[in-house]
Length: 291
Image (cartoon, rainbow, N blue to C red; front, side, top):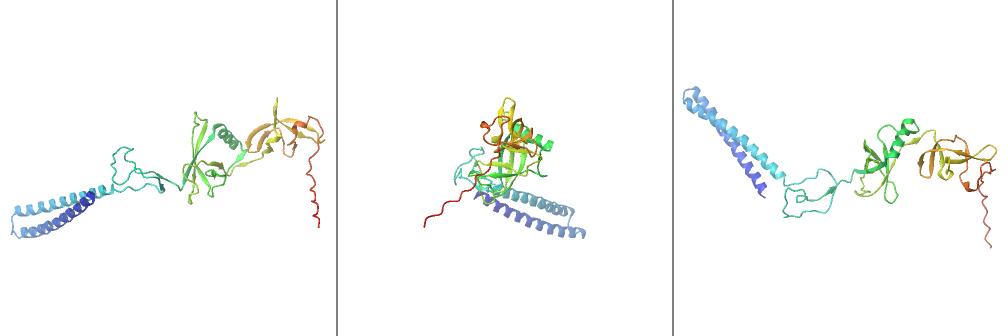
C-alpha cells in the first residue's frame, strides 16, 4: 500500500537523521577539545558547530515527515464516531469515491443504545399542563421529567426514559411543541425508525375531582352532570371540565368532594326525579349436575 511504504520510508529517514546528529555531535565535541589546545583552526571549529546544528534541523524535518506519513495512513481507516449497527454498504472494495457527499458515503450507522425518541405535544395541552403545574393542581417530582415508552404492540419498554429536550417555541405549522426522550436500549428491544408512544411519569393530581366521562353530557349551559341530593332526587349541575384523562375527566368547578352523581342511564333521568342506587344483582348458584 503506498501510504504504508511512505511511512516505512519516513521511519528510515528519521533513523538516518538521528545517526547523523549523533555523528556530528561527537565530531563537534572532538573539534572543540582540539580548538582549546590550539590544534585546529577557528574555521574547523565553526564548521563542526554548523554541521551539528544542521543535523539537528534535519532531525526535526524527519520527525515532521514521519508524523505526516502516519496521519496520511490514518486517513485510510474510517472509524465510526459512535457505537451502533451499520446498514447496507454503499461502496465496495475498489469503488472510486470523490469528495462529494453522495460519492464518498461508505455506509450508514445507527445508534441503538441509547435511543432518542422524538415526539410532539399539542400546544393547547402543553399550555394547560404548564398552567396546572403553576396553579398547584398537578405536581411532579423534582429533576428531569421521566417517561415510559410504549412499543408498537402495546407493551412497555423495560427501561424508563428521560425527557432531555423541550422546545422553547411552538411550531406554527403543526401547533405542537417538540420534545425528545433519551431511552436506554441495551437489548435492542426497539429499532431506530419505529413509531412508539410516550407517557409522562410522576405527575400527580392534587385535590382534584375525577369523574367518569360517561357521566358528563352537554346542554345549552355547557357541560352538565346529574347530582343526587340528600332526598335521592336528580338535580342538573353545570360543571367545568379542566382535563381529560382517558375514560375520566377532571372537574375544576361545580362538584365537591363526596357528592354523588349519576353515571349511567341519563337519557331516562329527568330533573327532580326520584332515583335509586343501583345494586349488583345477586349471584345465582348454578344448578347441580344430575347424577
